[in-house]
Length: 212
Image (cartoon, rainbow, N blue to C red; front, side, top):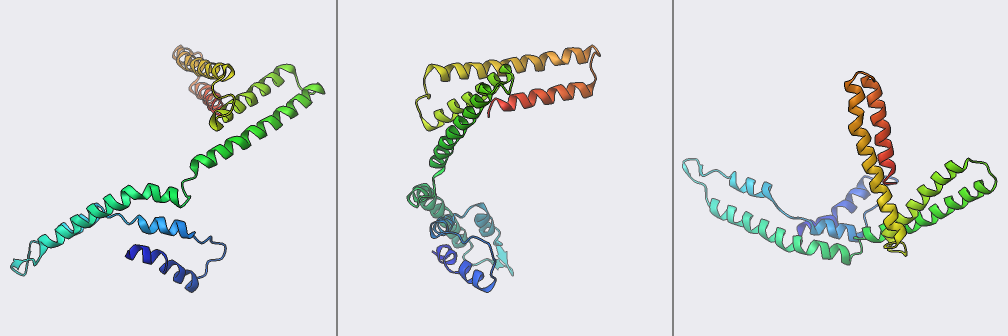
């Protein structure tokens, strides 16, 4: 209760006393979660155990009671707020990661379709080689399939998705083969260490593109 009261009083007093322009004030829901997250842990127990056994030649008064209260406090704050924190976050509308991810995926699908439209426009004007156009089409089609899978759209389980997944797996496998074979010319002295690092860097970039 003290922590909850603190979150709804002291920060406001500090903001009045020391204005910070441009700083966003936490919403009431966020302050509620912060106030509810006052779990105690090992530090509290360590502080209780640090109470000396003897003080001025006599047993420290109520040392066992201090340790017992600390233990009960830790157990209570871990069990009650710990078990209810997740439902509280969802109830307050703060656990929206999944909704945000779906929204991002839907926007990604729209942007990828826009890019494909531009690619087809360039193809109609014959401004780019066909091989490059095919590569660009493939990249954005893969992106659409990936985003639609995140949204749960029509491409989530169809044949195109399976083919795209197989192509990605095959490309990963081929990159792994190249990595293994790269050591052979280096061992024979046909390439320098700098050349090996450059090739490995290119393989790293190609592999990272597979997740885009």
